[in-house]
Image (tube, rainbow, N blue to C red; front, side, top):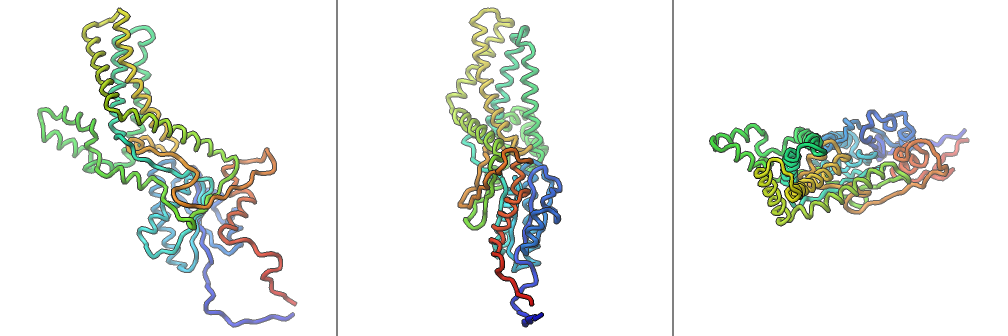
Length: 410
Protein backbone atom coordinates (compact mmCIF):
# COMPACT_ATOMS: atom_id res chain seq x y z
CA UNK A 1 0.00 0.00 0.00
CA UNK A 2 1.38 3.41 -0.98
CA UNK A 3 0.49 6.41 1.14
CA UNK A 4 1.16 9.88 -0.16
CA UNK A 5 2.13 12.36 2.56
CA UNK A 6 1.68 16.09 2.15
CA UNK A 7 2.93 18.99 4.20
CA UNK A 8 0.35 20.80 6.34
CA UNK A 9 -1.16 23.82 4.63
CA UNK A 10 -1.39 26.92 6.80
CA UNK A 11 -4.35 28.14 4.73
CA UNK A 12 -6.53 25.14 5.66
CA UNK A 13 -9.28 26.09 8.14
CA UNK A 14 -9.95 23.94 11.17
CA UNK A 15 -13.56 25.15 11.45
CA UNK A 16 -16.53 24.19 9.29
CA UNK A 17 -17.06 25.64 5.83
CA UNK A 18 -20.62 26.64 6.68
CA UNK A 19 -22.74 26.95 9.80
CA UNK A 20 -26.44 26.24 9.28
CA UNK A 21 -28.94 27.47 11.87
CA UNK A 22 -32.26 25.61 11.78
CA UNK A 23 -35.31 27.68 12.79
CA UNK A 24 -38.69 25.92 13.30
CA UNK A 25 -42.06 27.53 12.72
CA UNK A 26 -45.12 28.28 14.84
CA UNK A 27 -46.31 25.69 17.37
CA UNK A 28 -43.36 23.46 16.53
CA UNK A 29 -42.00 23.04 20.07
CA UNK A 30 -38.66 21.25 19.96
CA UNK A 31 -39.05 20.36 16.31
CA UNK A 32 -37.56 16.95 15.51
CA UNK A 33 -36.22 18.12 12.15
CA UNK A 34 -33.91 20.65 13.85
CA UNK A 35 -32.27 18.07 16.13
CA UNK A 36 -28.87 16.51 15.45
CA UNK A 37 -30.28 13.07 14.60
CA UNK A 38 -32.79 14.30 12.00
CA UNK A 39 -32.28 13.31 8.33
CA UNK A 40 -31.70 16.95 7.33
CA UNK A 41 -29.12 17.54 10.08
CA UNK A 42 -27.27 14.34 9.22
CA UNK A 43 -27.21 15.25 5.52
CA UNK A 44 -25.86 18.73 6.23
CA UNK A 45 -23.24 17.38 8.62
CA UNK A 46 -22.11 14.79 6.07
CA UNK A 47 -21.69 17.63 3.55
CA UNK A 48 -19.28 19.44 5.90
CA UNK A 49 -21.64 21.87 7.60
CA UNK A 50 -22.05 22.55 11.28
CA UNK A 51 -25.71 22.44 12.31
CA UNK A 52 -27.02 24.68 15.12
CA UNK A 53 -30.69 24.42 16.13
CA UNK A 54 -32.53 27.53 17.33
CA UNK A 55 -35.38 27.37 19.81
CA UNK A 56 -37.98 30.01 20.50
CA UNK A 57 -41.42 30.21 22.10
CA UNK A 58 -43.13 29.22 18.79
CA UNK A 59 -46.15 31.30 19.81
CA UNK A 60 -48.38 32.65 17.05
CA UNK A 61 -47.91 36.34 17.83
CA UNK A 62 -45.99 39.27 16.40
CA UNK A 63 -44.34 39.93 19.76
CA UNK A 64 -43.02 36.36 19.98
CA UNK A 65 -41.54 36.62 16.50
CA UNK A 66 -39.98 40.02 17.27
CA UNK A 67 -38.32 38.67 20.41
CA UNK A 68 -37.17 35.54 18.61
CA UNK A 69 -35.55 37.66 15.88
CA UNK A 70 -33.47 39.51 18.50
CA UNK A 71 -32.33 36.23 20.07
CA UNK A 72 -31.55 34.68 16.70
CA UNK A 73 -29.45 37.70 15.70
CA UNK A 74 -27.48 37.36 18.95
CA UNK A 75 -26.94 33.63 18.38
CA UNK A 76 -25.68 34.14 14.82
CA UNK A 77 -23.42 36.97 15.92
CA UNK A 78 -21.88 34.62 18.48
CA UNK A 79 -21.36 31.99 15.80
CA UNK A 80 -19.65 34.57 13.59
CA UNK A 81 -17.22 35.44 16.38
CA UNK A 82 -16.41 31.77 16.96
CA UNK A 83 -15.92 30.98 13.25
CA UNK A 84 -15.37 34.24 11.33
CA UNK A 85 -14.38 32.41 8.13
CA UNK A 86 -17.40 30.12 7.98
CA UNK A 87 -20.34 31.10 5.85
CA UNK A 88 -23.58 31.58 7.78
CA UNK A 89 -26.85 30.03 6.60
CA UNK A 90 -30.34 29.94 8.08
CA UNK A 91 -32.90 27.31 7.16
CA UNK A 92 -36.29 28.39 8.49
CA UNK A 93 -39.71 26.81 8.22
CA UNK A 94 -43.09 28.61 8.04
CA UNK A 95 -43.18 31.74 10.25
CA UNK A 96 -39.62 30.95 11.26
CA UNK A 97 -38.72 32.52 7.91
CA UNK A 98 -40.09 35.87 9.08
CA UNK A 99 -38.05 35.49 12.26
CA UNK A 100 -34.94 34.80 10.18
CA UNK A 101 -35.35 37.80 7.86
CA UNK A 102 -35.83 40.19 10.77
CA UNK A 103 -32.83 38.66 12.55
CA UNK A 104 -30.65 39.27 9.48
CA UNK A 105 -31.94 42.85 9.31
CA UNK A 106 -31.06 43.43 12.98
CA UNK A 107 -27.64 41.86 12.45
CA UNK A 108 -26.86 44.18 9.53
CA UNK A 109 -28.00 47.19 11.52
CA UNK A 110 -26.07 46.42 14.71
CA UNK A 111 -22.98 44.86 13.13
CA UNK A 112 -22.11 46.62 9.89
CA UNK A 113 -19.00 44.51 9.26
CA UNK A 114 -20.81 41.19 9.69
CA UNK A 115 -20.41 38.73 6.80
CA UNK A 116 -23.31 37.88 4.55
CA UNK A 117 -25.96 35.63 6.05
CA UNK A 118 -27.97 33.64 3.52
CA UNK A 119 -31.43 32.26 4.24
CA UNK A 120 -33.45 29.37 2.87
CA UNK A 121 -37.12 29.58 3.81
CA UNK A 122 -39.47 26.62 3.68
CA UNK A 123 -43.16 27.39 2.99
CA UNK A 124 -42.96 30.81 4.66
CA UNK A 125 -45.90 33.26 4.43
CA UNK A 126 -44.11 36.61 4.17
CA UNK A 127 -45.97 39.46 5.86
CA UNK A 128 -46.55 42.70 3.93
CA UNK A 129 -47.83 45.81 5.70
CA UNK A 130 -49.74 48.84 4.41
CA UNK A 131 -50.43 52.01 6.35
CA UNK A 132 -54.09 52.77 6.85
CA UNK A 133 -55.49 55.89 5.19
CA UNK A 134 -57.50 56.59 8.34
CA UNK A 135 -56.62 55.82 11.93
CA UNK A 136 -57.72 52.31 12.74
CA UNK A 137 -58.40 53.47 16.27
CA UNK A 138 -60.89 56.04 14.99
CA UNK A 139 -62.67 53.36 12.97
CA UNK A 140 -62.77 51.13 16.03
CA UNK A 141 -64.27 53.88 18.21
CA UNK A 142 -66.87 54.69 15.56
CA UNK A 143 -67.79 51.02 15.36
CA UNK A 144 -68.30 50.91 19.12
CA UNK A 145 -70.58 53.91 18.73
CA UNK A 146 -72.49 52.03 16.05
CA UNK A 147 -72.88 49.09 18.42
CA UNK A 148 -74.38 51.43 20.97
CA UNK A 149 -76.92 52.53 18.36
CA UNK A 150 -77.86 48.92 17.65
CA UNK A 151 -78.27 48.18 21.35
CA UNK A 152 -80.43 51.28 21.89
CA UNK A 153 -82.61 50.33 18.95
CA UNK A 154 -83.04 46.83 20.33
CA UNK A 155 -84.11 48.27 23.68
CA UNK A 156 -86.53 50.66 22.02
CA UNK A 157 -88.02 47.82 19.99
CA UNK A 158 -88.04 45.52 23.02
CA UNK A 159 -89.89 42.28 22.51
CA UNK A 160 -90.13 39.93 19.57
CA UNK A 161 -87.03 38.95 17.66
CA UNK A 162 -85.15 42.11 18.74
CA UNK A 163 -85.21 41.16 22.40
CA UNK A 164 -81.89 39.24 22.49
CA UNK A 165 -79.94 41.41 20.04
CA UNK A 166 -78.09 43.43 22.69
CA UNK A 167 -76.63 40.21 24.11
CA UNK A 168 -75.40 38.93 20.76
CA UNK A 169 -73.91 42.26 19.73
CA UNK A 170 -72.32 42.78 23.14
CA UNK A 171 -70.76 39.29 23.05
CA UNK A 172 -69.26 39.96 19.61
CA UNK A 173 -67.87 43.32 20.62
CA UNK A 174 -66.58 41.96 23.92
CA UNK A 175 -64.62 39.23 22.11
CA UNK A 176 -63.07 41.74 19.71
CA UNK A 177 -62.33 44.18 22.51
CA UNK A 178 -60.60 41.46 24.57
CA UNK A 179 -58.38 40.60 21.61
CA UNK A 180 -57.43 44.27 21.23
CA UNK A 181 -56.87 44.73 24.96
CA UNK A 182 -54.73 41.58 25.08
CA UNK A 183 -52.68 42.82 22.15
CA UNK A 184 -52.31 46.23 23.78
CA UNK A 185 -51.00 44.56 26.94
CA UNK A 186 -48.44 42.70 24.81
CA UNK A 187 -47.33 45.92 23.07
CA UNK A 188 -47.38 48.51 25.83
CA UNK A 189 -44.99 50.72 23.88
CA UNK A 190 -47.93 52.24 22.00
CA UNK A 191 -48.83 54.42 25.02
CA UNK A 192 -47.95 58.11 24.78
CA UNK A 193 -46.31 58.26 28.21
CA UNK A 194 -45.67 54.58 28.71
CA UNK A 195 -48.32 54.32 31.43
CA UNK A 196 -52.05 54.67 30.83
CA UNK A 197 -52.75 55.58 34.47
CA UNK A 198 -50.25 58.45 34.39
CA UNK A 199 -51.85 59.74 31.20
CA UNK A 200 -55.32 59.48 32.76
CA UNK A 201 -54.17 61.19 35.98
CA UNK A 202 -52.82 64.15 34.06
CA UNK A 203 -56.13 64.54 32.24
CA UNK A 204 -58.04 64.57 35.52
CA UNK A 205 -55.63 67.04 37.13
CA UNK A 206 -55.76 69.40 34.17
CA UNK A 207 -59.56 69.60 34.16
CA UNK A 208 -61.11 68.29 37.42
CA UNK A 209 -64.60 69.45 36.51
CA UNK A 210 -64.85 68.16 32.95
CA UNK A 211 -62.19 65.46 32.86
CA UNK A 212 -64.64 62.77 31.75
CA UNK A 213 -65.53 64.60 28.54
CA UNK A 214 -61.86 65.35 27.93
CA UNK A 215 -60.96 61.69 28.33
CA UNK A 216 -63.74 60.53 25.97
CA UNK A 217 -62.66 63.08 23.38
CA UNK A 218 -58.98 62.14 23.74
CA UNK A 219 -59.74 58.43 23.47
CA UNK A 220 -61.85 58.94 20.34
CA UNK A 221 -58.95 60.80 18.73
CA UNK A 222 -56.30 58.36 19.99
CA UNK A 223 -54.30 61.03 21.83
CA UNK A 224 -52.84 58.45 24.20
CA UNK A 225 -51.09 56.64 21.32
CA UNK A 226 -47.38 57.39 21.04
CA UNK A 227 -46.39 59.39 17.98
CA UNK A 228 -44.50 57.39 15.41
CA UNK A 229 -45.86 54.09 16.69
CA UNK A 230 -47.35 53.30 13.29
CA UNK A 231 -43.90 53.59 11.71
CA UNK A 232 -42.52 51.34 14.43
CA UNK A 233 -45.16 48.70 13.68
CA UNK A 234 -44.43 48.97 9.97
CA UNK A 235 -40.71 48.33 10.50
CA UNK A 236 -41.25 45.50 13.01
CA UNK A 237 -43.87 43.56 11.05
CA UNK A 238 -43.09 44.23 7.38
CA UNK A 239 -40.85 41.59 5.79
CA UNK A 240 -37.46 43.23 5.15
CA UNK A 241 -36.39 43.88 1.58
CA UNK A 242 -33.90 41.28 0.39
CA UNK A 243 -31.18 41.16 -2.24
CA UNK A 244 -31.07 38.42 -4.92
CA UNK A 245 -28.20 36.55 -3.24
CA UNK A 246 -29.56 36.72 0.32
CA UNK A 247 -32.68 34.57 0.16
CA UNK A 248 -33.90 31.38 -1.49
CA UNK A 249 -37.61 30.62 -1.14
CA UNK A 250 -38.39 26.91 -1.22
CA UNK A 251 -42.02 25.86 -1.68
CA UNK A 252 -43.86 22.56 -2.11
CA UNK A 253 -46.81 21.79 -4.36
CA UNK A 254 -50.08 21.34 -2.52
CA UNK A 255 -48.89 23.16 0.60
CA UNK A 256 -51.77 23.20 3.09
CA UNK A 257 -50.62 26.58 4.37
CA UNK A 258 -51.52 28.04 0.97
CA UNK A 259 -55.16 27.85 2.06
CA UNK A 260 -54.41 30.09 5.02
CA UNK A 261 -52.40 32.40 2.77
CA UNK A 262 -55.29 32.69 0.32
CA UNK A 263 -57.77 33.28 3.15
CA UNK A 264 -55.58 36.02 4.57
CA UNK A 265 -55.29 37.55 1.10
CA UNK A 266 -59.06 37.59 0.65
CA UNK A 267 -59.81 39.02 4.09
CA UNK A 268 -57.06 41.60 3.65
CA UNK A 269 -58.60 42.67 0.35
CA UNK A 270 -62.04 42.94 1.97
CA UNK A 271 -60.56 44.98 4.82
CA UNK A 272 -58.84 47.38 2.41
CA UNK A 273 -62.02 47.62 0.34
CA UNK A 274 -64.08 48.55 3.39
CA UNK A 275 -61.46 51.00 4.62
CA UNK A 276 -61.84 53.22 1.56
CA UNK A 277 -65.47 54.25 2.14
CA UNK A 278 -64.77 54.59 5.85
CA UNK A 279 -62.45 57.49 5.05
CA UNK A 280 -65.30 59.43 3.45
CA UNK A 281 -66.36 62.43 5.52
CA UNK A 282 -69.89 62.54 4.06
CA UNK A 283 -70.50 58.91 4.95
CA UNK A 284 -69.81 59.54 8.61
CA UNK A 285 -71.85 62.73 8.48
CA UNK A 286 -74.81 60.66 7.29
CA UNK A 287 -74.16 58.08 10.00
CA UNK A 288 -74.15 60.62 12.79
CA UNK A 289 -77.24 62.25 11.29
CA UNK A 290 -79.07 58.93 11.23
CA UNK A 291 -78.08 58.28 14.82
CA UNK A 292 -79.48 61.64 15.89
CA UNK A 293 -82.74 60.95 14.09
CA UNK A 294 -82.99 57.62 15.87
CA UNK A 295 -82.29 59.14 19.26
CA UNK A 296 -84.91 61.82 18.65
CA UNK A 297 -87.47 59.19 17.63
CA UNK A 298 -86.69 57.11 20.69
CA UNK A 299 -87.20 60.08 22.99
CA UNK A 300 -90.45 61.21 21.38
CA UNK A 301 -92.06 57.77 21.19
CA UNK A 302 -91.30 55.26 23.93
CA UNK A 303 -92.90 52.28 22.19
CA UNK A 304 -93.19 52.98 18.49
CA UNK A 305 -96.02 51.29 16.71
CA UNK A 306 -96.25 53.18 13.46
CA UNK A 307 -94.52 51.69 10.44
CA UNK A 308 -92.82 54.99 9.52
CA UNK A 309 -91.17 55.27 12.93
CA UNK A 310 -89.97 51.70 12.77
CA UNK A 311 -88.47 52.31 9.34
CA UNK A 312 -86.60 55.31 10.70
CA UNK A 313 -85.23 53.24 13.56
CA UNK A 314 -84.20 50.36 11.29
CA UNK A 315 -82.56 52.77 8.88
CA UNK A 316 -80.60 54.37 11.69
CA UNK A 317 -79.36 50.91 12.74
CA UNK A 318 -77.93 50.12 9.31
CA UNK A 319 -74.85 52.37 9.66
CA UNK A 320 -74.11 50.70 12.97
CA UNK A 321 -74.12 47.29 11.30
CA UNK A 322 -71.89 48.57 8.49
CA UNK A 323 -69.34 49.99 10.92
CA UNK A 324 -69.41 46.86 13.06
CA UNK A 325 -69.00 44.62 10.00
CA UNK A 326 -66.06 46.66 8.72
CA UNK A 327 -64.19 46.45 12.00
CA UNK A 328 -65.06 42.77 12.46
CA UNK A 329 -63.59 41.92 9.05
CA UNK A 330 -60.56 44.07 9.80
CA UNK A 331 -59.90 42.22 13.05
CA UNK A 332 -60.77 38.78 11.67
CA UNK A 333 -58.27 39.24 8.84
CA UNK A 334 -55.55 39.86 11.43
CA UNK A 335 -56.19 36.86 13.71
CA UNK A 336 -54.35 34.24 11.53
CA UNK A 337 -51.18 36.35 11.73
CA UNK A 338 -51.09 36.22 15.54
CA UNK A 339 -53.10 36.65 18.72
CA UNK A 340 -51.98 40.27 18.89
CA UNK A 341 -52.89 40.83 15.24
CA UNK A 342 -56.26 42.54 15.92
CA UNK A 343 -54.57 45.18 18.07
CA UNK A 344 -51.89 45.91 15.47
CA UNK A 345 -54.57 45.95 12.76
CA UNK A 346 -55.84 49.23 14.20
CA UNK A 347 -52.61 50.84 12.99
CA UNK A 348 -51.88 48.98 9.75
CA UNK A 349 -53.32 46.36 7.43
CA UNK A 350 -51.24 43.39 6.40
CA UNK A 351 -51.35 40.31 4.19
CA UNK A 352 -49.35 37.15 3.56
CA UNK A 353 -47.44 36.87 0.28
CA UNK A 354 -45.40 34.12 -1.35
CA UNK A 355 -42.21 36.26 -1.44
CA UNK A 356 -40.87 39.27 0.49
CA UNK A 357 -40.12 42.67 -1.06
CA UNK A 358 -37.11 42.76 -3.33
CA UNK A 359 -35.58 40.20 -5.68
CA UNK A 360 -35.26 36.61 -4.60
CA UNK A 361 -34.93 33.09 -5.97
CA UNK A 362 -37.97 30.82 -5.75
CA UNK A 363 -37.57 27.04 -5.99
CA UNK A 364 -40.74 24.98 -6.42
CA UNK A 365 -40.43 21.28 -5.63
CA UNK A 366 -42.15 18.83 -7.91
CA UNK A 367 -45.21 17.10 -6.44
CA UNK A 368 -44.71 13.53 -5.19
CA UNK A 369 -45.26 10.72 -7.66
CA UNK A 370 -47.88 9.11 -5.42
CA UNK A 371 -51.09 11.10 -5.15
CA UNK A 372 -51.81 9.71 -1.68
CA UNK A 373 -48.41 10.36 -0.07
CA UNK A 374 -48.44 10.41 3.70
CA UNK A 375 -47.84 13.49 5.79
CA UNK A 376 -48.44 17.16 5.21
CA UNK A 377 -46.98 18.86 2.16
CA UNK A 378 -46.21 21.79 4.47
CA UNK A 379 -43.70 19.56 6.29
CA UNK A 380 -42.42 17.66 3.25
CA UNK A 381 -39.79 20.31 2.53
CA UNK A 382 -37.59 19.21 5.43
CA UNK A 383 -38.82 15.61 5.73
CA UNK A 384 -38.71 14.14 2.21
CA UNK A 385 -35.56 13.04 0.42
CA UNK A 386 -36.31 15.47 -2.41
CA UNK A 387 -36.55 18.43 -0.03
CA UNK A 388 -33.45 17.46 1.95
CA UNK A 389 -31.36 17.01 -1.21
CA UNK A 390 -32.52 20.39 -2.50
CA UNK A 391 -31.58 22.16 0.77
CA UNK A 392 -28.14 20.52 0.87
CA UNK A 393 -27.54 21.40 -2.79
CA UNK A 394 -28.54 25.03 -2.26
CA UNK A 395 -26.14 25.39 0.68
CA UNK A 396 -23.22 23.13 -0.25
CA UNK A 397 -23.56 22.89 -4.02
CA UNK A 398 -24.23 19.76 -6.09
CA UNK A 399 -22.55 16.58 -4.85
CA UNK A 400 -19.39 15.53 -6.72
CA UNK A 401 -19.73 12.90 -9.42
CA UNK A 402 -18.65 9.36 -8.59
CA UNK A 403 -14.89 9.17 -8.54
CA UNK A 404 -14.28 12.93 -8.36
CA UNK A 405 -11.94 13.87 -5.57
CA UNK A 406 -11.21 10.23 -4.66
CA UNK A 407 -7.72 9.35 -3.48
CA UNK A 408 -6.48 6.03 -4.85
CA UNK A 409 -5.24 3.66 -2.17
CA UNK A 410 -3.15 0.66 -3.19
